[in-house]
Structures are given as structure tokens and as C-alpha cells.
Length: 344
Image (cartoon, rainbow, N blue to C red; front, side):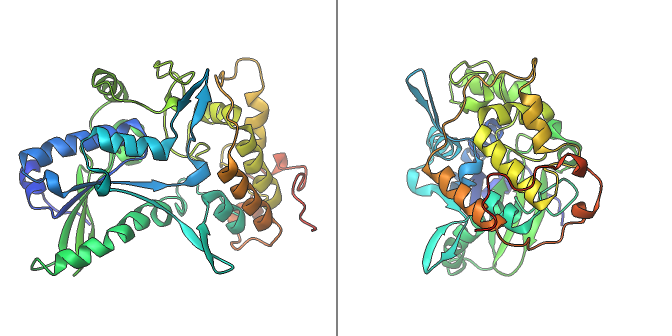
């Protein structure tokens, strides 16, 4: 869906809610700051909320290096919200969960991938976005929508602020600054990309100039401040990440990499259409591979996810992936199910 929009200040002035999505990364923070400045001009600051859709252990976690603790993505998203001046009660953090034996427990993306037997590749169903991020945030806003609809005539108008930039990919380059993504009797949602035209260097320089914290994963070593680490701060092992980012992630999170490789071997579907996790692990150990700077000691939340993945792999996949019948990457997927007691 698409539509024509007025001046940004006029647009912000008519929104009942302006929701800034913060991932803990630099781009969401920059987009949020620009949207907040426009909201301020429009007299709509009191309608600005921030939201973080947590992916649990798949996010870059907190790490302690040389006695200093550096926050993980979820914690940093809350810090970024405060840095923007948003009151804590207007920051939302959501995380997918499900019922297990009558209890509500976190449902992790990697467990879902293991159950499904497929990876979210480009050009295929992006199961890691809508159900795990967008829908959760909008679901958390539903109570507000119900209340606001009693006060206004018509649907609730929401600006969904994202930190997507044209420089990142061809798909994002072709994304309009505004586009209407939802329109029904309850709500109208317009996607808004305030930082769309800014370059990576411009965003980095702005962050440094403002004295704002950026995620430790962006640096060669936590606290180095050199932006010489990961280029993106999404899932630690995003299937769409660059080769360098993946090699760095594999070296920094070896247990996560081995867990991804286990899923790959068991389900016989390569991690990426161009490479396998097994290959990435091997290449990360070669001379000339990126120096991780730090190796993460995984926490109890990761161990719970690890158990969930092993349990999922004891059962048949829920989705029959075409990749299992393709030749892409499959010759490298040897080794069976080492490390997973599938027969138990």
C-alpha cells in the first residue's frame, strides 16, 4: 500500500502514536532522534513511544571485558530510549512466548527454525521479521488502540519509525520514505524511515558526536570505539549478513555457531544459499579471519534455548523445505547429528 504524505511536521502532528523501533543498533537510534525532533516541532512528543522486539539469545548479548560490562541489545535499546528522553513507561519490550505444560515460556527464533527445518533466506518467507517483531509490537499497542478509539472518530493513526537506510541493500534503497502498511477500521499504520538517506559514516559520526553509546559488537573489542567490528547489529548469526560479519559472529559466539551447524546437519538445509555454517566455522579458524576481540560466555537463557533446539531436532521437521531436495550446499552437510541425542 502507498499514499502521498504532507510535510513531515504536518504528518507527525496528525499521528495518535509515533512508535520508534529500537534494536540496540545505531540506525534505529538515529531514525528515532530524527523522528523525535520532527515530533517536537509538531507538538506531538507526548505521543512518542519506543519499542524493542527482543529475539532473546539470538541478539548480541551483554559481555564483560577487562572488568567492564557492556550491555546487550535489549538493555541498550532501553538505554537508547532514555537517551532520547522517552519516559520508561513509554518504552515497550516484547518477546515471543508460548505455553508449555501450562506455563508461558519464551519461544526462541532458533528453536522455531529447528522445529520448522528451514532458514529465513532472502526471497523466501521472512519468518524472522513479521511474527517475531512487527506483530508483537503492534499486539502490545492493541490496548492503547482500544482506548484511543473511544476518544477519537475513526481509526488510530500510527507512525511506525524504522531505522532502515538506502545504503544497506537494494531492497531498502527502493523503499519509500513513507508507505502505508496497514489500513482498517481500528488502525492505520504508516511506515516512516527518517534516516533513509543517511550513510553509515554519517550515522556513526552523529552517534559519536552526540556522545551516545553504541553496541559493543560494532567495535573490534568492547569499548574500542572504532566501529571496526560487526557492520550490523541484528541477529548475531543473521542468514543475510555479510561474510565478514558472519565470520566475526562465529568466532565471537562459537557455541551459537555450533548450534546452528547442528540444525543444518540434522535438517539437511544449508544455513545460507551461498554457504554453510560448517564452512563458516572452518573459515573463521583460518589465518586472516577477523579477530573476534572477545569470545562470549553464554548465559542461562542461551542454555535454555540450546535445550529447546535439541528437543526440536528429535522430531521430524514441520516444513518440507525445497532446499532439502536441492544440491545447494548439501555436499558439505556431513556428520549426522553429533552432539544431539536424537535417539533418546
